[in-house]
Length: 230
Image (cartoon, rainbow, N blue to C red):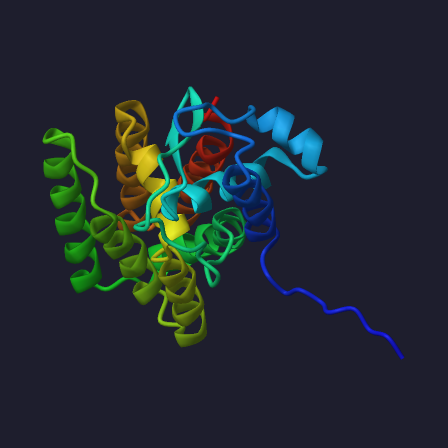
């Protein structure tokens, strides 16, 4: 009986493997731009978002430089190049699950949040405003705001699930993905405004407003992950 090994590696890592092998074979020289996402997706028979994740993985490995709005360029190879990240969750898959859970968590938090939770939300938002004024964005502040809402739900299973999704964002690929977005001022400003709306809905006890504000926020980030690259 002959059996073929089954790979459980993420599809975007498998795609990154193929592109890496082409780079190492000399198909693309250092400094040269790789084919566009659209061309790579057609050639590989995968979606453009999967190609995008693969390119970010290659960037984390030190093999390419991603220039948002321009494309991906092959970097000079040296011994400092890292291996591909094997254990990273797909950033787009993580976002899909967040879009399912966090709007409902925001709605629930609006009905159950304590005075201490409300104070923590307001303080976190104050910190985020100060960061924005300095053209900064810190993922720690972002996570604090979202996890304060999860804490306020008083549901251990929901909190642990949302925390696991945020922990997945600590992976190298996900962190680089979001940092590219945070480097764009218009996106940072939009995200701050989204957080203002979310907090306003929660602290006023407006469940539908909180749900809607969170859904619109996550939709915006998801769309930015898909649309701001080329």
